[in-house]
View 1 (cartoon, each protein chain N blue to C red):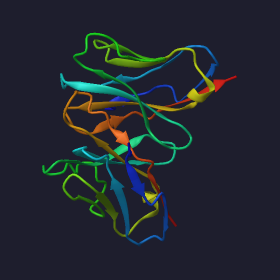
View 2 (view 1 turned 90 degrees about the vertical axis):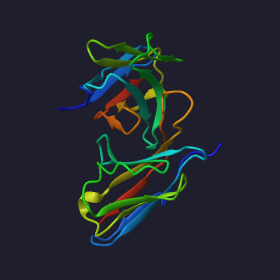
View 3 (view 1 turned 90 degrees about the horizontal axis):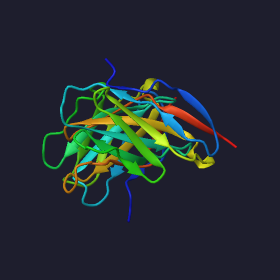
Length: 116
Length: 113
């Protein structure tokens, strides 16, 4: 079946511009996560959505970062007034909070953001 | 304090040998899960194996096994009979409650033919 998809796969933007990254989770997955991975580093949690509950925004690094999710479907991560330190791969993951207990997260291919 | 610690930034292993990738964790939550993911050079994150804090037996998935030592807060990944395709970054991660994963810094594994 279809996995998690993300678009665009690559984005180059000028410093100060806004960017919007999109994630389509696996159908039926109620939980959606955004992570950031800087070059050569591990993944940093950004934000988590679970159904209609209030999102966990504890990982967002500044108020320039925001994310939305419509129901249990598409999510967009928006970065306003981009800075060079925002350059990274942004990974989206989804999981099924239901049967079983592993809550395994399935990752998308990521969006590579380069701020020039 | 680091929640997930991977002390081996890089490892080189001969093909067909077994390899152990280290991971220690820190949590006060009695209910948690430990995960290992593989990230090849293509960038995707591939789930390998999961161990729940209440699981009595070590998890196994094909050539992968997780050496879970709860008292030592250790969750090492063991890959048996390594293959060239195992060359990748490997990340250990912990889930507390039902929320986010916290990742370690990763170990870059290179299999030598």
